[in-house]
Length: 119
Length: 372
Image (cartoon, rainbow over all chains, first blue to last red; front, side, top):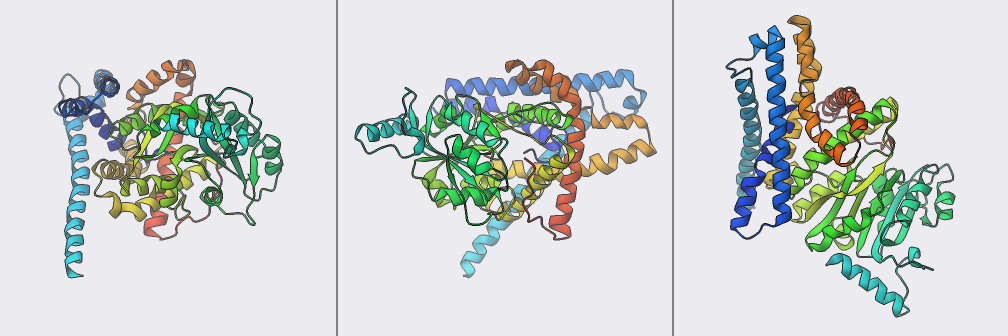
């Protein structure tokens, strides 16, 4: 099953970012002696797919920017038609959602420890 | 290695005259390795499909020790068909009410190291079980699942689902597995270490997504789950609106029920927590943007905002095209691609409804409605 709306939304961006991070993660694992050729192959594969997705997404916005007048009025701070502001805002939103989940964990962790002490 | 161990163990049993642990091995004459796997096939009114499922199990590159069909008090000839196809058929006194119930009913009869669950309308690639077993070479792995693709790709709903699976299993799930945390070990085709499965309580009926419940319980117990893309299965997917709606309702309510049940338990697991957090956002806020914000923008500002529904299409096509090309199904994928959009819209609609019913109105979906 796919939760929510596959493709669009924060979930899609989250997995693209995760795919882009596979090479740095594998670098760390290599240094720690926990990597393998198979894992490196997967990391390169995921990074290639994620990079292609970003390039295609950029090209789509660029085409829209050229073709549609409304795209020119709604994409702020664009660089060659690529809506950097929108992309940044979405990334910040992903970070906020993840931070919120982390804060929830910290708060509940504290409360859990407090409960244990009380009991 | 787990695979070699199980094969040798069973071969030893045969040589010593102790006999294999299951019916599938009786009278075997071929050279295929016998593996310590019991396959559980929960079935309710599956007479039309169960024989094909059993055949695909019997023609694997490795032979499962036992094929156990749970005829969950079917009203058709499911039990007879399964027995005629060569499976061991068991039948509870009364209908168990869910797939989880039927599977747990059979779990007590499993005597092998591994237990596999497969839907009665699902067939496997010939090497699927062998591939899946490879995951258990790591002793900490408790469950593994494979790549899911629709068996039939004819109707618009089946085509939409086919595209969704190419994207999800060709990209999302592989990234999840890289980080060691597949979101779900898919219920239609998964294998488990039997002792750990029992320790986790088997498949629970407390939510409508028993596979998600079991997977998240495994993570909380410190166990590993794997996704093996080379192990491919082919379930029958909903072919019309009625079945698709039933399946999506079950999945959506099941997800919300699992979040309600496990949210405290998954918070200490960073990647799982992050996946569930963004999934919740997408399921609620993303769906509302699809169903409310975009239509408002279209109505009030410009019809060009309708492009918001399809603007991610070219980006989605990247992993879809890549996976389809590897499978030599590029034309099928491209032809099917437009069907993905109505499915996505329906998914959004049903998810918002599920959240509303489960969390706001407190009217949980409790009845397991079959949608394939």
